[in-house]
Length: 462
Image (cartoon, rainbow, N blue to C red; front, side, top):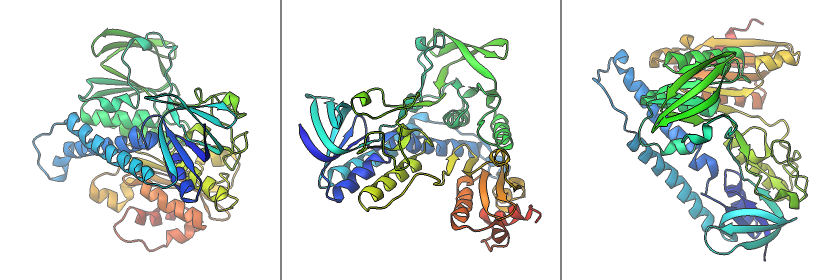
């Protein structure tokens, strides 16, 4: 059994950077990864999907080129070439990350499945060779999440369904892609493959898409996607799958009391993600999990067992790469630099990379109402944004919730080209305490998207 000062399990956006920084701080550190360096973001999430979204946007622009005075007779989508480009970007990031880890003095890397076999004892079963045991006083869990598969749906296990990982391996465009779940994953892939040439049907159990967003945001995004030809069925669930042959699936769906059959070629399961904790052996450590398997933590990211920390998606809460990375910075600064940082009240910005994007920060209008706040709402259609008009895409709107008394910005949603970048400008204002009346008369460069924040806040009557 080998002793370390620190053991990090999982090399995602918290685990990899943390392991390097701990080693640089003089702690002998072991990083354990069961699959690929970089975690979901680099290998199956942000990096490959946003690369493919970029290709899908080019296909969309090509379809509209005649409207912009550029005559193109036609275009084709080469999914094999898109996949090749995507894999190249993924491998560059993955291999670069692994090289940096391997070159870090005081940091060891081992590939294999890790589990606790004692309070602070880890057993690793490598892909080849015998199991090995390691101990450390400090242990950090960054094992992430995996796709939830609803095995209780009749016939689902009899078809070759896709997940957000396996869909990246397709080399030909599906004829008809049916998606279970109208969340971020489902909507991004749905729009992407519609632009590549698939017929797309999205089944959403709830009354509308993105139920945690304001209703006007949900309806606008639904309208945008339906305008592109996606079929979105709310209040609908799949109740039976039947395999009719290669790429021939019949799905029985239920909307209220009404049943119908839909024929499709491919099925993507995107109803949610579950924490990867079942194989960690946490029952031997004193680390507690909630009813869904997420690891319980305090506001310093420490678990119910002192000296063991959980970072990233495995702890529950906002499942975003940037939150995972921020978890690492908080843990490192607290343990190594002696700070007293907390995850409480930190900003949680996020984007959904449909086209146009949805950028979000702070509270929604619905949340402000629920809290009984004295607030006002500013709203500006992208059709009134000069830059959007000039570039030929006026879909979406800007929206901000502000405190009527202090004039502080409480939250914002931006649907539009560069929506995430516009949202970030508002986040910086929130971080700096800049009130909306100052933004109203701020001098922005013309013509930019952010310039229209002037007009957004001019819509509020003081």
